[in-house]
Length: 232
Image 1 (cartoon, rainbow, N blue to C red):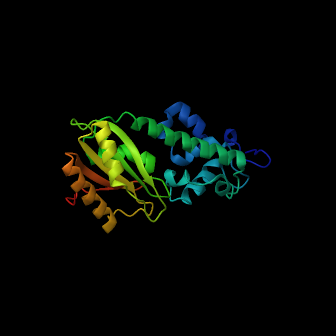
Image 2: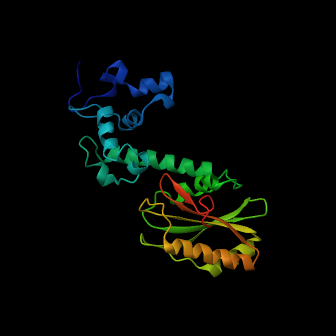
Image 3: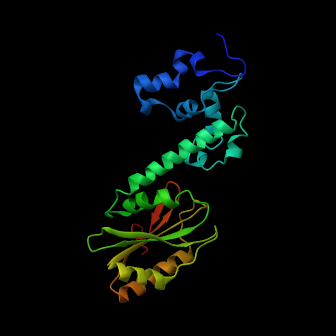
């Protein structure tokens, strides 16, 4: 098989290793993550195909696309066969995917379970490397009146202003709120401070007839619900 000097072009691959053709003939859902990335980068090197290169890149992040999306252009360029143009293409494609998830979330207008809260906020805070605290304000039908970032802090924690939470709830006419913050470490166990602020907001809310329905700790793939676990 003839090869282009310096690279192995997709058109020169065997029929079983042509992700572009596979996508056209069988649809995008049948392709593996590595094959989709191979389409983005177009070619590998003299030593490996684009699919093999893509598999190597994915293996470095435990085949996790979310983790791949966190790599910088310079980090992507450390892989042999990935120059700036290919690195930018990968980064741009993953950012488009992240924004698409965010648009899907906009359709969530009513909270029906802790999973609804996770689906609403995970695209916003699930992959952050710093901690953020968010509030969801609800009416008496559990419809979302507003979701708002209350505070943003370092990886060690964030401050919560109880007065600001309740002031906003009263202005919106909310009858219930849901608390949520992320743990960049990936741990789901609530800290003593997490429990303390939950109880503080719950007590203050009761005096104003504003109910704290739940508090979620959100990570990249999972969440902990105070309500579901009976610790609210």
